[in-house]
Length: 461
Image 1 (cartoon, helix red, strand yellow):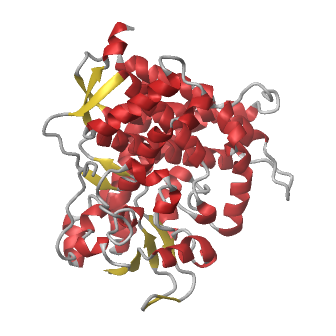
Image 2: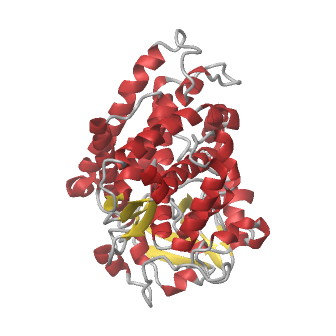
Image 3: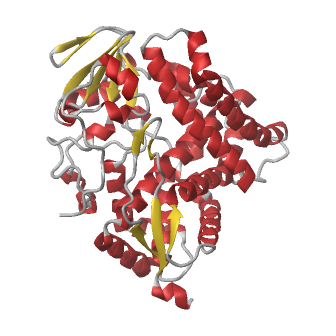
């Protein structure tokens, strides 16, 4: 049996509504209790909101695949994310979403993902150069490194623009504020706080942080948008695809605001979720020496000390399975928020129109009925898809709304992990325990401190 990485121990019993508000505002994970990991469906009663948590795979499929129209993305989620993402594919529904998805699809077909591989590799090379500045055996704050490199990958692959340190610091600090304040704002909404009080309690701070990110992205996009016709063929990035794509029905291109919304969404989904996943993968490997060694041996067998090429990515199957298992234990988006358009009977409950419905990968991926030793790290689970119970593994979502950048994220993550593992042995800092919080993504509030020791053959090179 493999390692059992840290996870917050659930409470024995469910907290009262008042206790939830007073003591569990920091993270939605704080509100979970033992039965959350065993139940098929549960109800959370808020003063202004009824919320149902659905773990039953049959009902999950109904919500995410079969009856999607009656379970649209949550309006509350849209309102919370609109200051940062605008009307992007992440929160829109119905015809608007379908149109956006079709217009974005060409940017994420495998040919396009292959074209941006060199840009991904350049960002990863810069990350490796940065790591050489640390002394051998140094404790590295991995969370910061992963957050910067994934943001840099997004800037290069979408915008052909390298993320400089100063701009990167601004963006990442602003997004940290958005994460923290959005969780608090959501809870205030559920407890029917008046808008003026919400603004007084930090809402303005959240809106300002979102505008900082949009301004930085806007300043890069605007000149490209203004000069789109003259730049045809000049760039190989995703923005060039977005600037040229035409709506088949209207024969219209994306407006500037529409492009800004989609790029903001791609930035959030593309850097934050991948940064979270990579941080947790490195954490797991740092406490799993056998699996770490096995991954290293595969990397050497596939690439040796040569340059990583795109064809190597598919050959590193064990590294990919390590990442997939990390995604199971620490899914970057721990819950998918939906709402009901009509009254719906589900199991033994009547879910009334307008109620919130949550499908939580965090719970389903660790559910005792679906997984053997659910909290244990075991990459071999992913060697055969038949070993995984249907509709119980969904780190990228499922159904028509499955993450459009899934292939992009897998390619980038295997590349980054392979670069690090080829050069360094990882070991968690002594006595370090991650402080797991669930906000927009699942993160460690106290970072991730890992000791990086150069492998012997790297010291000779």
